[in-house]
Image 1 (tube, rainbow, N blue to C red):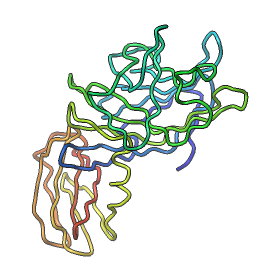
Image 2: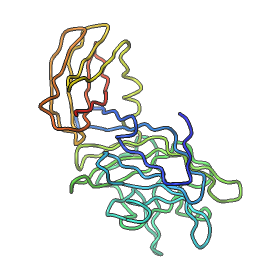
Image 3: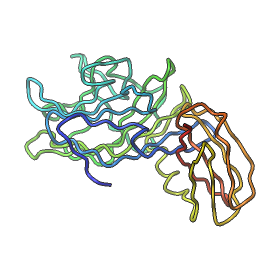
Image 4: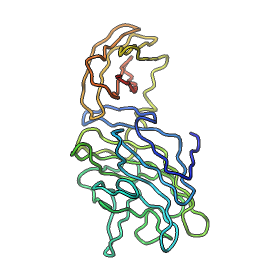
Amino acid sequence: MKKTTSKKILNYGVMSAAILGAASASGQVMYTDIDDAVLDVDPEALEIDFDGDGTTDISIALNTFTGGPAAVAFPGTSTSANSNAFVGSSTGGGFDYPSNLSEGTLIDGAAELTGAGGRGDLYFYACYPNSQWCGEVTDGFLGVSFDISGANHFGWVRMDVASNGAGGVGSITVKDFAYEATADTGIEAGDGILSLEDNIIEGFSSFVSNNVLTLSARTPIESVTVHNLAGQEVISQRLSNLTETVDLNRLSTGIYIATVAVEGKQQAIKVMKR
């Protein structure tokens, strides 16, 4: 992945990044891979729109406060907070500290949530006792709770945090993120990454023309299912040929995730209905 830097706000959502869906028995994980977004200019922020609805769900930022520079996370934007929250803890002094989760940690309604309507301090001036993002953090996971159309969803953001060598934060690198499209359903930190790397069908290709999705493979295609970004199944077809088509005309305009099965392997692709 290449480095992305800017002195202005960076914005990533499902419209501008590679989004892929991994279906499971319990729900639908929507994973978004981005070019590594490196925040190393103060102030600088990355706004993340998990589901591509045009609303910033969380922001990761470098900011200078009264006591010095800090790495922080905001529910919403840095200037407009909302009721979204992070997995973490609160102190008696009113400070909220997002947890640095290990891969595989379950993020759900049983997790302690903090930061709603305010901010979460990842690394504030120096390493406070409650800070879990101090020093050199590689592949840490930030657990998130956020709203989609009045329903609660859970997700994660994978980040590195580097020290500036003088006890303060030097940079934040945001690598990717994912969320569970089924409301009130938990997601494990890192869920979605392995399923995408391990399920690439060799020789598979696809394209959309005139709202018809064409699928091609070297061996017969077995099936295709299409989900919307809310995780709802909208098309399911059994297939049997090397080349197959799927009519998208009855779907509403927007982004969908098509999951194709070939010889027991599944591959998810982003599909745009115009």
